[in-house]
Amino acid sequence: MTATQRVTVRVPAKVNLQLAVGPLRDDGYHDLVNVFHAVSLFDEVTATEPAAAGTFTVRVEGEAASQVPADATNLATRAAEALAKHAGQIGADGRPYGVDLLIRKAIPVAGGMAGGSADAAAALLACDALWGLGLPREELMEIGAGIGSDVPFALLGGTAVGTGRGERLTPVPATGAFHWVFALADGGLSTPRVYGECDRIRAEAGEEVAWPTADEALMAALRAGDARALGAALANDLEPAALALRPSLARTLDVGRDAGALGAIVSGSGPTCAFLAASADHARELSAALTAAGVCRAAVTAEGPVPGAEIVP
Ligand SMILES: C[C@](O)(CO)[C@H](O)COP(=O)(O)OP(=O)(O)OC[C@H]1O[C@@H](n2ccc(N)nc2=O)[C@H](O)[C@@H]1O
Ligand SMILES: Nc1ncnc2c1ncn2[C@@H]1O[C@H](COP(=O)(O)OP(=O)(O)OP(=O)(O)O)[C@@H](O)[C@H]1O
Picture 1 (cartoon, rainbow, N blue to C red):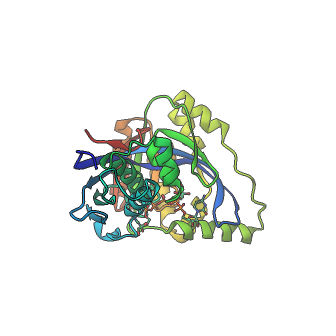
Picture 2: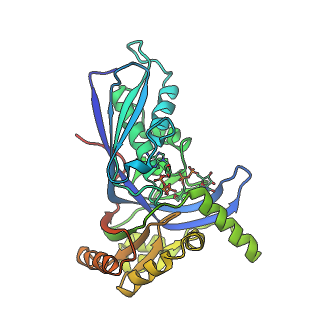
Picture 3: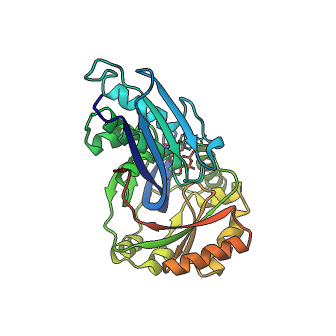
């Protein structure tokens, strides 16, 4: 261990600007073109030296804490244990690596905004610092990919295209800031269930599943910082599946569109819905309209892109 006794990392949620889902692979995953965008809705993960060397514990605070497992299945704990294994289990001082993790949750749970993946990414960065490993971020991203497809992006942040199962990332140059509103839903949706429903809908329609490709109009909108063009280009192949599993989301999307959103989309596997606004003021208006219509548990505003996981000084 180093002299550092406690490290806190702040980590953003994501929204998928384009989620093109290709054919189902033999390993149960789908090849994707996944345009990730990090937004200013953050979890915080604090890593502290454990009372007993070699132990891994986790506590969760926040409104949704009861929905998050506080045991070895927590994605943050799994990430810390994977990092300890990667580093050879025993520190330079001869003691086995271990950590007490505290997660302060603000990202909706099972909401399609990669909250669990964000916590895993934060735990990797926090334990790397706590244990004095100093691994390059690329190496942490590789370890993260073993925990979940969305984990590497939470370490990278900004806007990036993910290929493969979403873990192979290329940053996308984007100009300016985009203003978002997120309509949070009661309860979550299971990611494997939503992918399964997507496969079922496609099989029923007898569709040939195309190889996913990046949308050039979307890339141009990002380069130009053109919110109107970006709003028109937002696309999510998982949306029909999320709507089939949670039909009430159709009305949430309609209310946002009617209130003048530049784009309205289910975020990732849902059930959070994302709305692109023209300005910060417009985002506040949209948020008020969604709340007044009673089509969400809560509406929150955020900006993107923001950096990936960062140590809080
Ligand atoms: C929906 C998204 O959040 C969009 O960014 C991601 O694709 C899901 O990423 P994630 O939650 O990190 O997912 P993982 O933990 O890697 O995988 C969970 C499950 O989702 C499905 N899955 C995930 C990623 C992918 N490219 N194809 C899939 O079919 C698989 O059933 C997999 O068993
Ligand atoms: N640290 C964590 N935070 C939230 N959920 C966790 C965590 N660790 C494990 N989980 C479990 O993972 C499930 C999915 O949580 P998560 O919030 O990551 O979903 P999501 O945002 O829909 O994911 P994605 O957008 O990556 O598909 C939860 O229902 C919970 O049981």
